[in-house]
Image 1 (cartoon, one colour):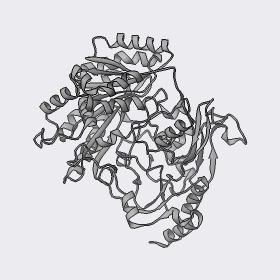
Image 2 (image 1 turned 180 degrees about the vertical axis):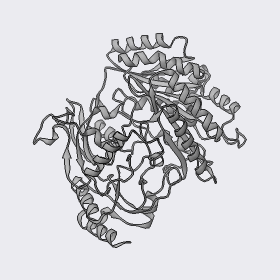
Image 3 (image 1 turned 180 degrees about the horizontal axis):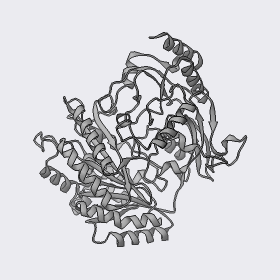
Image 4 (image 1 turned 120 degrees about the horizontal axis):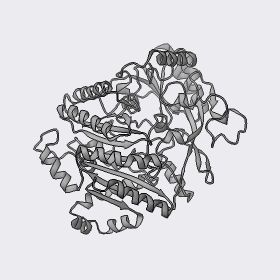
Length: 532
């Protein structure tokens, strides 16, 4: 250990307490694990308990010139988990900062710290007997809300574009100073939680997907429970079916008839959700043989593309939305169904009988159906964690740790205009590349907004198989390269691809570098993260 690091650790121990500074060999080894091959040496782990601690972390880091990398709960699976973008960093883990600082039922907001998880907030609202729902992603209950928001993540509800539903950021700058965004910069400003802009230049966007500051709290807006809530599910056949469905539903999303996030997964993605790789049925072959894919698709009742969305509003609004969806999808889908609390309760009582009547395995489908339904009304689920163990030959453990269990997972999420032809182009290109590398093309198309879609691509494999890590990363790199050639770029990056995209325009790069130099001249905070 060099003298500067030794002095910094001693100073952190004095400021934070020895229990908040971890230099144990096992801890440092575990936090450097990810769901793909990456080698990083982590120098120490700091676990601040409040924003004052975070300020102290940064001031000491600057004093002794020790680079730090910040994570919320560190469960950024598929994009690097807790692993720093560069070697020889100290990790600042914000998991101990898990206070819900403010809550307003009438104005539907909550102020949270980075360690507050999806499950914690959902339980909090349940205990309060609140009529408010929190937007949920498919991540497990123990994942950070702020961590996802800072990556501009998306959920399932009418508030799915999460970054558009926040206000009042509290940010520790790289030098240890602290600022409040919007009206928060004024003493006792009453509108800080409800009006994000305040006066003057708005700074909030600078701290999403950047290394210009550490968000230690923010206000998140919650969704009022509607009078009526229903989910809808549909199946489409072939790439033509995908294009038709997207183009049919796009006007309804644009007009606000559909307000939720809308997810459409291919047959590979659906089967991946329902269980592990059928090694015996496939005769040990990879990728999944076409005949096995068809057999499992028939057994689970999934189509080439399988979509879901949610409807919120008054009884009349939901009835009208259902009518418009039925009209828009007529002749374009194999099946369209709507699910309510009552219908779900019936299916849960008689899954075998109803499954027999419908000629599908409802016993297998029910947990996934129920999880999607719950996400759309603010109930988190960990059901998708098992899908990361897709290629493993052992059953997923009760306590799942994809990093330590050597699950292979790499995410990539290109964005395109909300037109069916773009989804088809991306899907076809990705499918061709992934099958060539013997990986299943696990693809979901997500309605990101009224005008944009995102294709969520998952490369899932077993890290215990020699050579799979390198092959998966080469597949990932080929996908990046090909989609960039076609003009499709991702909405977020991971540790594995921070430097693999073409360089942005020279003037943009110049501005970002000037901002970094002004706020963090020694590049102490998360060096290499979203840096040009």
